[in-house]
Length: 380
Image (cartoon, rainbow, N blue to C red; front, side, top):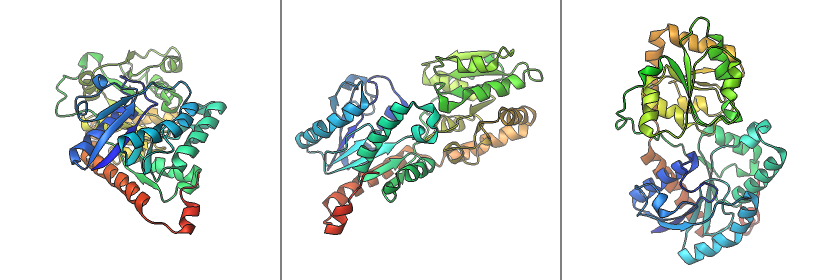
């Protein structure tokens, strides 16, 4: 049986980020296929892990590093030693802040490249160190998993030597639509739903400006934001317009599912997304999607979304106006969205991850010529 070290030191223990949630789903899927055993190296303790994997993995708990670049350099020594002790065949780095060495081979997952695709979102020092980490870890990975074709194209654009090693393996919806029994939150009235922390790439200011522009003709239209907004990005962009803004954070899955079900639409005005799970969650729960026409969002949403230019609040306002005035459009988006979300399945995601991991192990054991050895996995 192939031994896999899932390496995820960058994530906060007990705080389920998108990266961690995807990793846990992938681990559960891999274990369910029965061909690998898994050791999880991360800041999570066994007690903090989801029940689906808690007693099925070996756990190595490490502190979350303060400086990622120093930890990545440290992992060059500590992870190979751990792999020898645990008889690891292949390391799966859950994101690029992992191990450049260890096991017979390595596979690394890239969720986004915001520091490259929207450089204004990142400080110069952070961009330089992140680039160094990507070059070291990805350059020494036999395979790189991109969560979308858009992310794959960005990787191959900025790191041309990765061409031929990148595989697209999408995720799937997290919320279980069949188990979400909470009633829609009708007390909120008509509202546009935004999901995610208000980081630069999310571009929630455009959503606020668009809804504010509709305040005179649709005074009851509100915004519900699920996530943190420490800089009050949405409120500031409303600029005093009479729009009701409801802020929610760290709510349960039942409440989130109810919000999807009751919304006029989910709005994703992002400048860039590596994948965007809320699009699939909304579609699975019968919520129409309005999303940016950039990056991964149109790819993930498929035909089940109305797209717009995220730099143009007027374009989003026009799309919202159509949704309010055309009941048939809303019904069509729901139907197309539910058809689209069926393209994504965690069992298929696990099958594809397993294939990438086993390919990486086979490549490591395949005899190579002297010419191949000289060019093997150059740094991007």
